[in-house]
Length: 170
Image 1 (cartoon, one colour):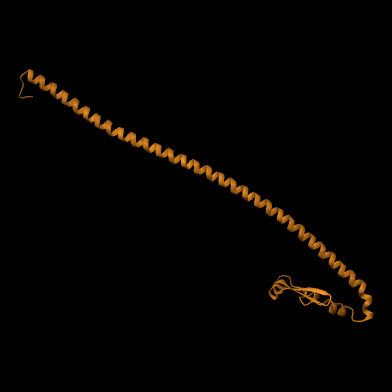
Image 2 (cartoon, helix red, strand yellow; image 1 turned 90 degrees about the vertical axis):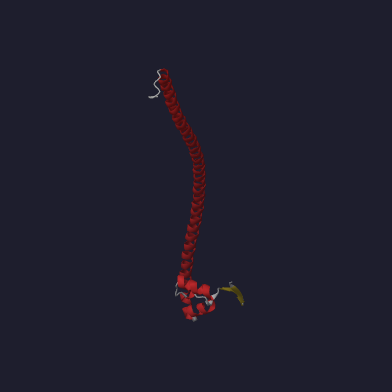
């Protein structure tokens, strides 16, 4: 957690050591303004140690104002890029949700078709079993009819033989 301290009239915020180390690693800088232990009074005294050096004040202020303007522009561009990225992310999430919804609908349709196909296959299997059962009965009936026909033919031949008294041949 960041610590806040009051030194005289100045309010300063300090970051934990790990955070400042990570920032220094990611954004290395030799600028004394970027140091965690920056002291503005010492910095101004080092830039203008005597009254004679005060003539450099105007160019120094212009340079600092230029840096501030540059930083403001960079921050503005970063905020704009972040806003665009947020909009893009929201749009991508919306598209992903729509794609997931469509996929869910397609899966549901496929599942319904699969269930209908399974039911149709079961009906076909039932019909095949019925046809197989009917085929067996038909074969049994045909065999019985053939045997009955053979028996009828044999009885007729026996009658003819008996009428003609051909017992030996019968």
